[in-house]
Image 1 (tube, helix red, strand yellow):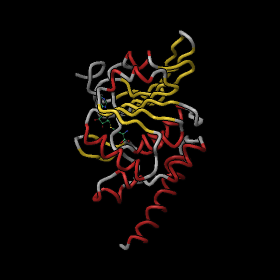
Image 2 (cartoon, helix red, strand yellow):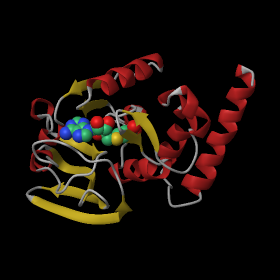
Image 3 (tube, protein in one colour):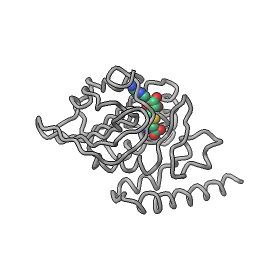
Image 4 (cartoon, protein in one colour):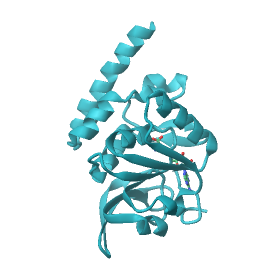
Length: 219
Ligand code: SAH
């Protein structure tokens, strides 16, 4: 296929992803829908997998890791209620696609990844898209990022046995944290909110993520 035809095909697949997989389910946040209708998801995948960029499931991104299903990424983002003014912490940069969504919807993003190659490749793609409000950190994200805390929103994109305690401590007043919590084979996507000293926890839906490996995570 010629480049122009490929671009048209991607655009059609992207529109159908937004209308069927996102709007067609329970994604109603217009800002989330707009950014996912605009960001070229294929750029975050290796060439042989690009034709599957808008399919309804997770895909490999190298290093034994995966990019999540578009619907789950939209759902997690929707629960953060971003308005554009927030400082956000993301744990698990991976391909950088989720990071790009957060960067478009908030003021500033700190994204932590334990595999340096993934962090570097994500940075290259986001730079090429002109997203310059992101800080890339290679470290164990289960410890959070105390230097930059508190955060109005925290998103964990790898499975943790429990919500890592440092992340709850780094959540600001009225902050929202979303994380997949549970054993390695299946988890519950949970929303944690803070109002003063009051920490509330609500279950969103069952899910399955690659494990968060670190001090306050799986060993
Ligand atoms: N949000 C990503 C999906 C990432 S998969 C995307 O859109 O592509 C989960 C990522 O978490 C993997 O890249 C994995 O290397 C990373 N990870 C696992 N344990 C981690 C830890 N303790 N700190 C930071 N990143 C971690």
